[in-house]
Image (cartoon, rainbow, N blue to C red; front, side, top):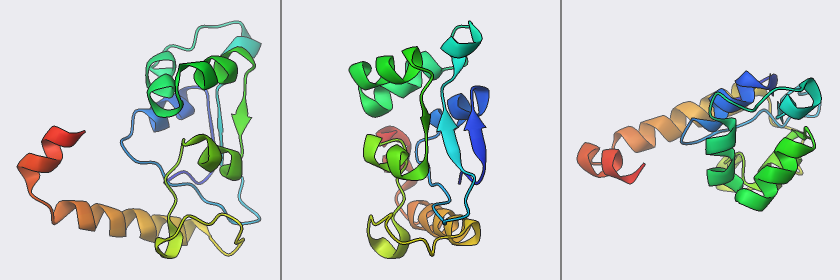
Length: 124
């Protein structure tokens, strides 16, 4: 669950996760940013590997080369996060808070934990 700014290494760490949920409340400070090029450094730490796997090579190139910072709505539209509050993909609601996202993440983890462990290990 992403609650605040995940910029640079934080974004890369988030991209290494199989599932990402983000605080989408109206007062959220959550964002994902790949600002390496603006700092004159390489997007190491998995950014250049995991980002294209999530959103495709062309979109990843654009994000990395332009130092893109995604707000929650943009992150969802790009396929970077998997928010599904109340079992639907609607980020137009501003009622989501970090406690909602944390609860959703724990609920999702519980659903995954109930599945066959051999199958889940081989899928991701």
